[in-house]
Length: 107
Image 1 (cartoon, rainbow, N blue to C red):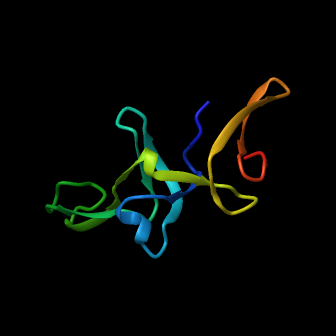
Image 2 (cartoon, helix red, strand yellow):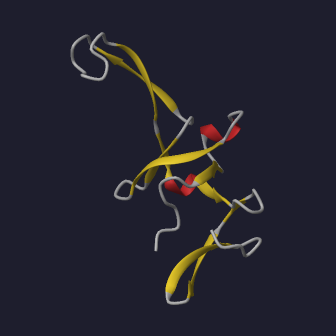
């Protein structure tokens, strides 16, 4: 079972984004091969797009999108205790569920 999933709220624990004013956000995308995640509002990079190259932005310009952060540098934020925590996996009624290692709440 995966310990982090798309839509989870995570906190950056190390790296350049740790010192940002808001170092929490929701996971947009997970790249399991490269072990990297994209987090909403963090590690924003700018891309200069030429006119007519992109259907979403035919006028071109400067696009801002979230860059990737190493998977090892983020920790899941428990919805109950609102702290960055490690995640455990246990079996309940024949299904695997994730739980917070600090407050023992099911995630």
